Image 1: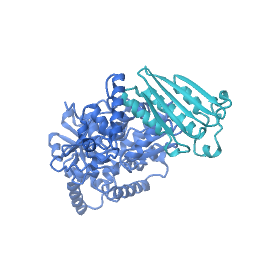
Image 2 (image 1 turned 90 degrees about the vertical axis):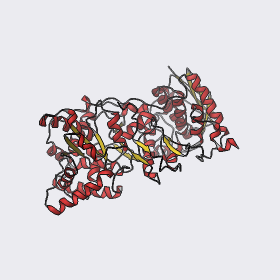
Image 3 (image 1 turned 45 degrees about the vertical axis):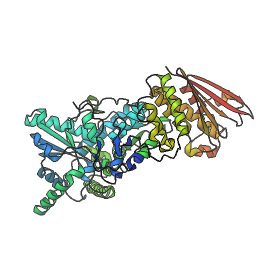
Length: 424
Length: 137
């Protein structure tokens, strides 16, 4: 078992120059430079992927499966998420994209927005019976869930106990495929086309579901090349394929940060995206600063999943693409949200979240010492050491701040000599 | 162990800075998340009171393995009628403060609600000190 699989971001030592950019950028201070190379502290890493974005030598990458993995399964199904659709112009028929996925190795495609319609309804029902605490925090972004586990464990009771649409889709399509084709579970590969490292980690680690139905993740950037070629070919051969997304326009919008909120019809909701702002909003919830807000959708990537670190097109291009597709879809629906949802309810037997979801586990950074008294002593040492440090946060020691350095020393992960000012 | 944090006058942007620092410190000491949150909420309410009514002041946390005591001291006008001040919804905050979303009259009642022991020492014209005790077990 991959017991130690805690995060999906990896550093390639051959190309890492130890430049400190990622160390400084990391929201949760999970990176240090040791012996000239970046080292990620996987317990603390939330897989937001900011380090992937900022690395000048592209030394930080996400672990994901290559297309060749598909050979190990009899039937392979791709989960087409809104962020997947966002990689292509919104006027390009979805059926062309699906055909393209078939040509690069998948046997069929499942439209995740369809599961989104079901999940939105679950969220509405959940709120009808829910008594608090408010605000409820969306469970859609696994990096946010990790942030809550590690930094805001007190907010775990606020997390929406509903599956992410892609997980609901995976459970449904896995069950139906096994039943219809009479296959063994290990013969079916369900693949998440992923914009980020966090979704991949969630597959290996299942932080909020008992057993994930997803087999693995392929990054959007890694399939974009072969898929674009296939799509161009198909377009040249037959150009009149009907638009084919099944879920409503409201679910397509989940790829954008505001989408989840709009699709649930929640009136007193707030939508936040980007690591710093998500962190600040979670902090405000902890301090009870937002008691009137009912629902908060949180995405670690700015602008939501279209802004993921593993997408192929620029997020603003992706937003343009997706908005166009949403507009096209909306033309075919009635303007009214609930009517569109009614019309979309085409599949029965979606998995009820409560059968699969498991409560998040608190995973705060370990205390300075196991015993409170001993931890207090270490804290005194930390404060005393910090007072002797220059407070410049120069990073020469490999830690992002003097405070982090002092904490590393007190925890036994470094020595005072690491600071060039103390050595002088 | 004692920790002191200064609360600046009318610094709404940074309101909560003391409670956030204190929260991070207590997490590192291994205090249970729910207790940490109670302390953070109580301290935050105190900070807000301190800057709205007290004209700034100081937050002093006394940390022992069994009890955490948070004192919020100001040298503001003092509270003439403590009983009234403890009523939910009763506030002397100005319209300007209310427009910022504060001054709902819930500060002191909330501080009492989240803490295990609660005391107010106040003298008109001299200032107010609120003392909250939190049991660690």
